[in-house]
Length: 168
Length: 280
Image (tube, rainbow over all chains, first blue to last red):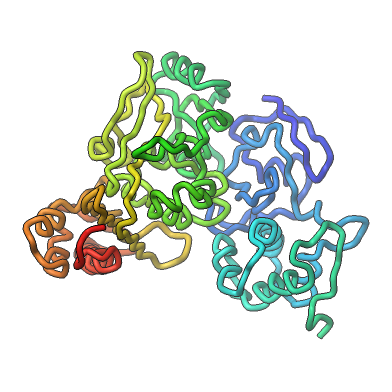
């Protein structure tokens, strides 16, 4: 079946097998391998991307279900080489260890910050409950999300505030 | 994991979905958010020959004031239930529990109709609709029929829907400000409940208690409700929580542990719902 989707702002049109999962469409057809396959069972969140602005687990969405939609992957966050505020905060706060969960974690955080304006440490932890870090590096991940909020309550794309405590 | 091959058909309207169902019968499954069905298909525990995608029927995504009840379109996502001001004020237990389903990503895709039609005894929303005494509206070739929640869950992953019917609306009665509680006991945040309890205690609705994952279907804790109606104190009534249940055994827990959990969680739910005090 032919589908047409907007991926990171560019239109992609392909004839796909209906059983093709969105994550494999992104990785294998479009070559966007920043999105990872982790558990492949809707648990770990490594495959999280934005579909029409909201976080989804792309291992549990068929590519045909995304037809006509707008997808943002980790590759679509930075603009002209400038990191998105959430990416910058993960960098500054060292919000990663092995890095495998990071793309999904960042995408979940972008969606969370977009939806909730008054986040606290507790609600950030709850809001990221769909993403597992096998290294258990949650403290710095939560710190990174809170740092984004400290720098700018509603970050704009391309805006890269220096969060408090950055550059340690 | 890749699902077995299937034919994908996209319905442009509920009527079209029904005519596709009539054409393909038992070979077909309806696809809404896909967050119950696709995992089963990836594990090859389900392999429908035809998927009829109803996920784009936005006219079945709504939360409306129906007078004495709130009417919810079957394709309303958990995320929308969770944020609904109408549900928050009139049926707060449903808005609260919708926010406990899976995780944010799941709630962005999963729908109330999909969850109920899937009829998983471990799911949260079926027990809530059962405790509230909700009504499910099914549309088929002969028109619409209303199915009380108590008659909807027939067996493990089996509902009262006929193969040519589609769940279109869920009606939940408005509460009159009474108490409620949802006790979800799980090991990790995103897991299904090992055991869960939904309780409402309300002047308009009476006292309804439903159990999650204590048998092949979500169950009303009838023995507890009868004990309370006969005047038993809440703590004593809660000790009947596992009467007439058939709790499953799995990686998380055996039947005896689940029976224990049911008694403890019902007691906590009754306490939180204020059952020891007068209704309403």
